[in-house]
Image (cartoon, rainbow, N blue to C red):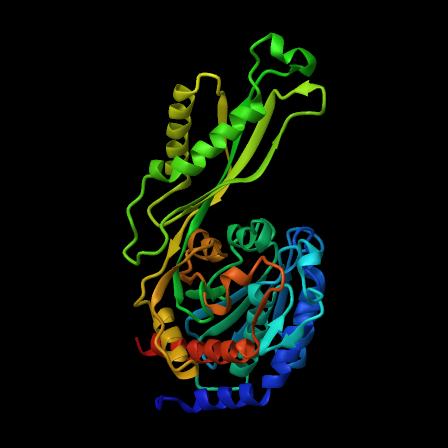
Length: 416
């Protein structure tokens, strides 16, 4: 690519000079635990704040719905008024899970075979590190108009009630476009641009049976809630997707996904014939689907199941949900990302449906900010798994992409 501006060249020079520093900072973030639950974002926020201040970026606001669970909004102004662009990443991680399955200490980031290992490496502390340095790079150059915001959120891994969801509801999120730095690959890193984020419906189904003394269960005809629940789970696993009402998306992709039995419980104890049970389902939604439409589809499935099995009594509860989001592929912020990736990665990336839900629903559906739902280093199957890792050069690639994309976005909006 030859169409680099003087500002582009200056930010690239800064990021090249700090490449090793960026990697060290990413490792420092990984080494600062913030598994959610319970959270612990305070320590990570302190590390981020200290690094920003060391880099000369000082307009940092800490916002918290709950003590010890902060969010950060960092403002980096240009030379003149203009559009506001957000780079956003969450600073919590999933818990480490079964420590015996980790080949390395989750919080002792190591480099092995060209990869950086550690909990939160791909999801998404390396992206956060890259955003910090992209912001620092823009703070060092002139010639652009607008404001770059770095928004680092708490509680994303447990529903964002203390993070982006709360900030959007309180009016703290105000911008013209946003890029969420979730890992954008499914089979490889930097695979595509996640212009669509699938939504989710979180479902609980309760099954009622006959609770009684188990020693006399063979003398009567009681309903075993565990047995009926197992029957229903198998039926739902096999049939539920066929009950969902949706139109396939123009980008193709996986469509909705039905995960049955992500949690379950039944019975009381030995000696007690099981009179109750429940299980949970996680259903991923594509644009056009709503929590309300999925609720109706599930109820129709349950009605048919209870008609087929008179011994089954099942009750549906919707525990929560978020909508899918979508941004046009010709939106200026997407064009800016494509411009940056063609330089840094030397390839053109196509639009795609990101399989998961991201903070994009808070930015876009609640705050009204057009958002790229997922564009960051790493890829999804390694997240939420033992031995999480990504390519060691991911932070350096991401920082350059974010910085160049921001400059291109501000320039296009100024002339557009």
